[in-house]
Image 1 (spheres, one colour):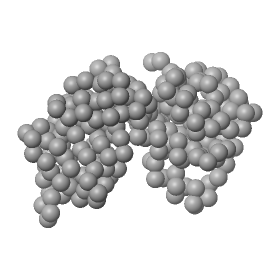
Image 2 (spheres, rainbow, N blue to C red):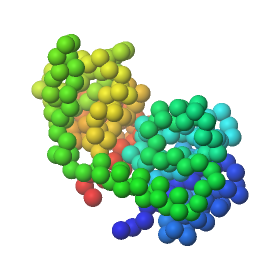
Image 3 (cartoon, rainbow, N blue to C red):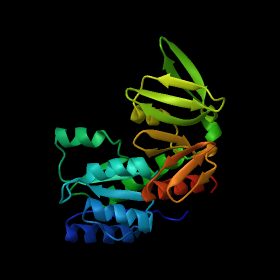
Length: 238
């Protein structure tokens, strides 16, 4: 099996070089190292890593947790945090983005290997055939309703509610944030293409330069979102 390409985000150049050296010794390919949030965004767009190693403490206004939030919204890849901080406050913030691993400095080469292999293995299990998970249960008033995944065309946020737009034309309003709804849906089929929109990739008719077309509906997307969406859709057929 081909080893994954690892993206490294670390603002200390010496540490970044050491990480990349250790990764290459383990047989992985590494991207250009990124010392900041902005450079990491550019690197992901251009080099498309399979997994991200992200230092939480980056120089600049946005840190590694901010970067992880962006990755979660646009790329279906694992994230492993590297940090010298293991305090409760940092851990609590990190938990909010559901990282696939968390390594506290200093760490051994074997720690990197174990964390990467486990994260990739866990993520590959999520990318099973869509038929493996075919419905979710959503609360409608006092009742719970079974909704089959293929019936959901797209989901949009409406203040404190998520509106499920179904294939039969009906709309189901669920008391849930868009983020909470995304956690219920399998990431190998559904993709969050904006702050308030989730789409079922199997219902997409066309992906244009700046839009996603589903039936008569059109949704504006950024370049980063478009690239992540195409990567996800291509992954379904590998």
